[in-house]
Amino acid sequence: MSLWKDFTNGLVRENPVFRLVLGLCPVLAVTTALMNGFWMGVAVLFVLTCSNVIISLLRNFIPGPIRIPCFIVVIATFVTIVQLTMNAYLPAMYDILGIFVPLIVVNCIILARAEAFASKRGVLSAAADGLGMGIGFTVALMILGGVREFLGTGDLVFNGRALLGRVWFEPAVVMIMPPGAFIAMGLVLALLNALGNRGKSRAKTR
Image 1 (cartoon, one colour):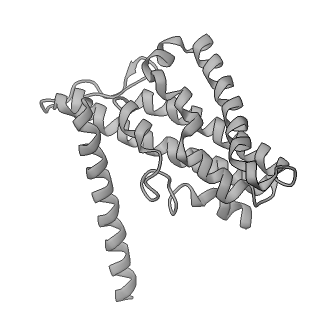
Image 2 (tube, rainbow, N blue to C red):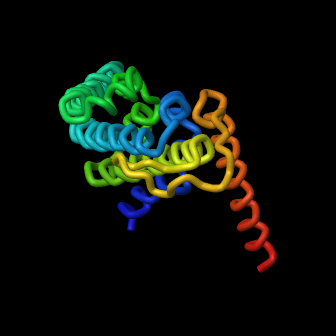
């Protein structure tokens, strides 16, 4: 039950984007399309889960005063693996994501989970936390990317295939421009807060 709780925390209750509001720099920058959000999320998921596991394994051997530099070395190792893999097999997406792939090293979500969770818990719990937070981050990026792409282009494209076809409304190009990131984020947060408040009010009436 504890492992399940560790896993599900990052999906909804402590979603890193919509609840903790962490790591917004890549979230706002790369979510111009559904595909961009998916691959950025997968990269963060891999780094977060692997670094959590390694840091948990080494937690009793890392001296407290130098733990942060040690965490960064571990994280940077997996980020390098992601960079080389994406550059070799997904060069077009690697070019689109650009500087935000190496900047995963300093993503505050990964460092925060290393410091607050992985360095204090067992390997299985750390892995469950990394998977949950990583999946929650990926889903959040896909939601934002999907909203922006749909409103900005009138369609959703995944793996080179159009999912919807052109729709009836006139696309708002601003949604795939930098201001659109803040607009989409505000809309999604407003919707989630409204749903959360509605759920609380229903619980009180019962």
